[in-house]
Amino acid sequence: MDNKMKIFGIGISGLVGSRIAEVLKDHYIFDNLSLDAGVDITKPETLEVIRKDTAHPIVLHLAAKADVDGCEQDKEAGEDGQAYQFNVVGTQNVVDACRESGKKVIYISTDFVFGGEKPEGESYLEGDTPNPVNWYAKTKYLGEEIVKNAGLPFIITRLAYPYRKDVFAPKKDFVHAIMGRLQAAQPVKAVADHVMVPTFLDDIAFALGALMREDAEGIYHVVGSQSLSPYDAAMLIAERFNFDKALISKTTREEYFKGKAPRPFNLSLNNDKIQKLGVKMRGFEEGLAELRVEG
Picture (cartoon, one colour):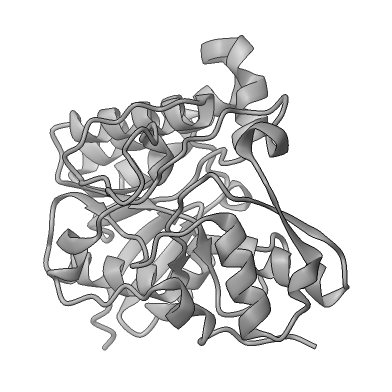
């Protein structure tokens, strides 16, 4: 008899969710609630499967419009735009369905909920006040507030720049995108005035496993242990895989994102809280050592 816990996954076939399901498959059964399965989170009537279910105690909610610049274009449409409909209305619909069936919600959020105003060298804690500077971040923060105030058991995990061990064909993570350009001897312009925390995706999966095992609640920063700029990250990738560093040049947020959504400066997140559960969140150089090189 299979004693694995069953979990509903919404948006679990993407870059992040598919790897989570793969890493945790020995302990959990993830049932994918996708458009192919007739589930559209913007339409509450399609969430009947959650309302009527008694076998899945947790809903892992990853579905979102996550294209930062695409979301910014939706801003003018406000509540009628796709970003708001997916990230806010959709989250409300999922939470409502979970309330009716008494399910715990695990909401996947983002480092972008913060404004990036902290001085370099300082990190955001879970309790710091969000201050989103673009529409994607604003809609994800509104989603957080819906989950927090739902009166349900919840976990909010803020992720940052996840990258995988292998290439995810439908959409490359930022590490494999840079590797692809360097491998093809193409130039890479990398932003030097933005601080991020790249996160090895297997560690995100292990962290979620620990949170579910401990029946934890609250907000957790599920991020790596090394803060650096995209430029520094590109240089480390070149160094690790023996690519030509001369292909990499510095640029600024102002130049690189001209005409696009504003980006925060310092998105260094503190991960002490999740590591206290015994989860090792690797630094970027440690994560790169785990990558498989294709070709």
